[in-house]
Image (cartoon, rainbow, N blue to C red; front, side, top):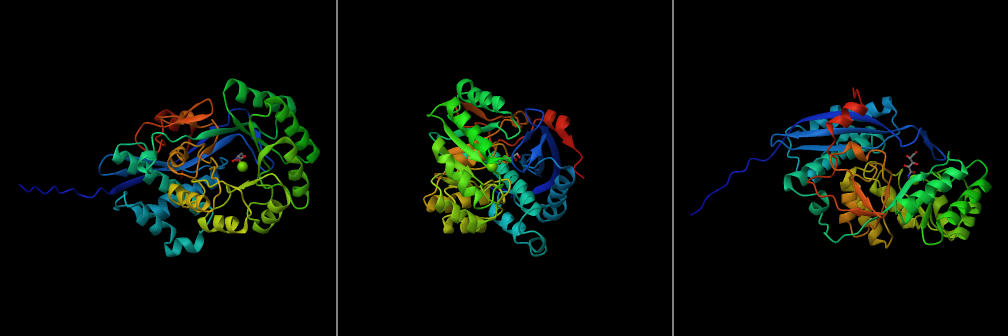
Amino acid sequence: MYSALLVAAMIITAIETFIMHVPVTRDGIADSTHSITHWGMPGVMIYTDAGQIGYGFTGTHAHLASDRLITSCIAQCYGELLLGENPLEIEKLWSMMAYNPPLQWVGRAGIMTMALAAVDIALWDLKAKVAGEPLWKTLGGSEDAEVEMYNTDGGWLNFELQMLVDDAKRLVEEEGYRSIKMKVGKEDFTEDIRRVEAVRAAVGPGVKLMTDANGRWRMPLAAEVAGRLKDYDVEWIEEPLWHDDVRGHTELAAAIKTPVALGEMLYSLAQFQEFIAAGAVHFVQPDATRLGGISEAWQVSDAAHAAGLPVSPHAGDMAQAQAHLSLAHPGISLLEFIPWIKDCFVEPLRIETGSLRSPEQPGAGTTLRASALERFGKPSA
Ligand code: 0YR
Ligand code: MG
């Protein structure tokens, strides 16, 4: 007997934007170029006629006016392209948004890309929910995948030396992290060296210690300071120079022994390809919340992996969605983590002795608790 099952394609029926400003774990933190008190989460909920809702967001420094540019881009520019479309056709929708003629005219990078990221993440969340599985599975990941998490929340530049050292010890000795990152880029670079030396002495030789200058230095200072980091067995120096400087990073990478990491401020696969082709980067750090979502972060990870470079995503989402990308992609075994927003989610990330426990609930892990929206929500228009 032949029976035809007529399945009507699911469609997007509505989209709704949100903004949350979530306090950082202490009164305020700083790196060499930013001081913040809150993490910003402009994002979107995508509704369908099948009932499931996809949640996606990007990460900002909680500046309401620019957060609203992102949500208005989602609602007003991408919204009308998405309504009535099948949300499972992510590649088609991504191209429709990214290459839409009037939109790409005004935004091949920046706010439009961060808005695209939020939408793309929501679409992947939806796709995995429809499949009834965590996104890492939808992306082809294995039950056996292992991802190490490194913690960035102890090494802020505004911390006095004692607090810096205490925090590094706490993360390693009490929380079980095997890798931590600290900020550099003080006015007086000899202070950076003293701080790195103190943290290395406190945690001992077995812990991976990353350093991050957040784009602060210029040549030849960068070569001088970064050159000295090799004495403290530093895993990498991150963004030693201005974010877009391919030539500078190429020169620096050739001049120092410590590997160079970068990528958190890059908006496209094409930008990453330039750095990779030039030999300007050793640890590649895509961020799905700044690139066009999981879709483009996957492509960057492929490009890096194909070039033989390790991939370690930057956590604009505080790792919540990129945990899935990392569990699924063969080039990723190390992911950044900062705990500020984890309790906003129905399924917060679980990390045990520095290792990621695979999320279990269907979706990208981005479903928000209603209480978080109530507590941290800001008017998004
Ligand atoms: C705080 N991680 C980073 C935060 C962080 C920044 O300004 O946004 O330090 O994203 O560089 O590697
Ligand atoms: Mg960084």
